[in-house]
Length: 433
Image 1: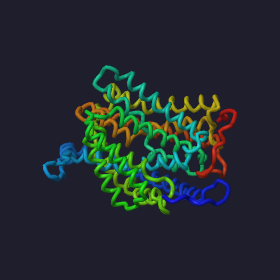
Image 2: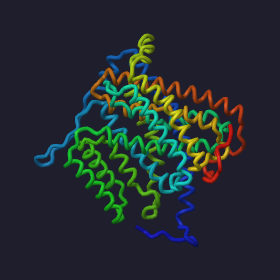
Image 3: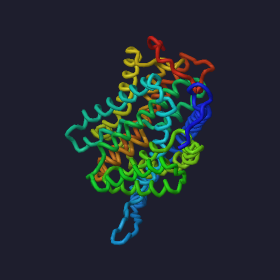
Image 4: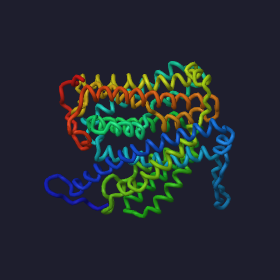
């Protein structure tokens, strides 16, 4: 590794251009997520239309088995899964690789780098995970759906940013920063939930091999290896070892994202280049395919009404809509009152309540955790999926309506969209709406 030069004082030479690139990446991310939210919505609708027009073809297509493998000496390595599982285990690993890089960047040089700025949205994210999980667990404890408590903890940043984009300059730019930071913290929690609580029978030899491959990546970086092909081979091996270990294979993607250098490596901004190249594919290909494979649920008028009587679906709906609203807003107001942090300029209590409703759009990761929870219980999985779809629609509609009213009552100034605006942590109290 090269020793960074200095521009004077204690500021490294790479800091200013790195900061500009981080801001550029965040803006690109927001634009992509806003646009991909539309594509994601179209994919979800297409899945519903397909599943209800001809359930047999939908189910049969996504359950076509496909296997790959090779033999090394007397050791045969193979993976044989149906298409839906390939999407969940392999394609989504690429999605979580990008998520891992986003988290790493935010921790090293972004909003999460300064604990004073990050403390309030992190606290809000914790509240927005704990309360929905408790709501769901209270309704499903002791029942067949008890394992699905992790479903309502997630927030789909693509949809949330897409909805915020519809308001343009009528909402303060600080609200986007607050929600983006909250969503990143939410991603960390969601990944932890998947890794810890949704792990099947653990294979210690494969787990040790996965840990060893992580060590190989670290060693390669220490020796200055910069060939992407080398890391690609190691990454594929890490994915396979994680898959065989019993830990969900997407965790391998997260680990590789965390290991990606957030600062220049041998004169190259590796993370910026990878995100720039991969974001379009994960946003417009991987996640829409995931939605197409997982959002297909048979819906009938009577069945839709019966959904609200099913404990699994009701737990998901109340967890995402009411749980997110109470958890995020209450944690935020307590954090402000205790001076843990302050709201960004221009953001008031009304904005927080509206954003808390929007955070109930769980969609992508909620569907993902539902699949992990009930992969072997098709009927319960269908309830959970329908609950996620209904909750996401309700949360989106209620959040948009609430923020529309708030934007009319408390119009904002020209500061909107200022993604770089710093948050002063020493404000004495929450401003009135």
